Length: 331
Ligand code: SF4
Image (cartoon, rainbow, N blue to C red; front, side, top):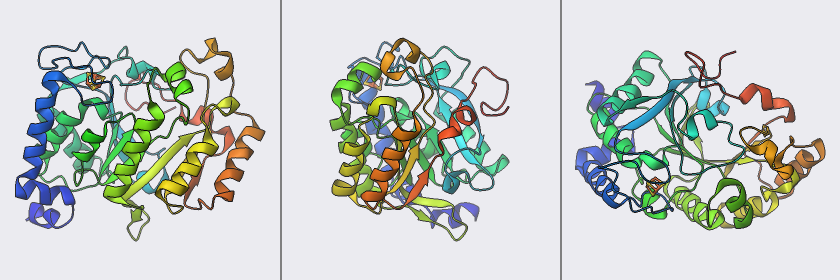
């Protein structure tokens, strides 16, 4: 009975009942044989090893799973966002605040899709989280869809959040139509030159814009329930970088023109020179008050009124520690 009620609730239940979700999982899994899951298209066989850029094979590396209370209010709500932090990444940002896990050096647990399904159910049933928040999911999309296939008959019924750096291929995002309820992409750069230099990402602006436009086509504007908890839609995160390196004006103008002024934005001011950023003079400091004000003025002048503006003094509050036992954000 619990499953029947849930089946009326989520689009991924409809896909499961029609058999389409299982077909998508199979098709995505086949692509791991010559991996083109993300724009890097490494072509490696992930059934046999982990020789691609993201150093990920078939097993899923999870650095942490927890109720996260520091996400945007519509995601964290009162009970927390059920966050699964995947290890490794398909970007290599020199300022990465999650470098303990993104470069695969920290502690992590390896699970198959069945183990991943159990984590989703733990976050829903034991921790009572509002959603399943998949952080850096790109390189594990096939395993994630397979895990959702396994978790649905066991009662999974909360929104799926795809929390991505947006270096995603259009083909992969298209395969998630109806699977993901809430897309939470970064829009990191407007300039391919800076994307290449700071994140080792070729054509980031082009790939990320194609992916975000497809995400918006699938889920539209943010919809919340009567308690303000997100149920579906797009939230775009934009991290302000020093020296205007994020291309904030260009990216925000693109959002307003190509998507809509009604899109929900999360403007983040938490930049801190983590990881190797201190070696790069342009990134070796925090954002100044005047740089922050300029971005706020751009947001206002474009009429992008929906979302959240993080305060400039937030950096220390948002730095996780994945070496700590338990919750990476506890103090
Ligand atoms: S998911 Fe990993 S192996 Fe596959 S194309 Fe991207 S970086 Fe390469």
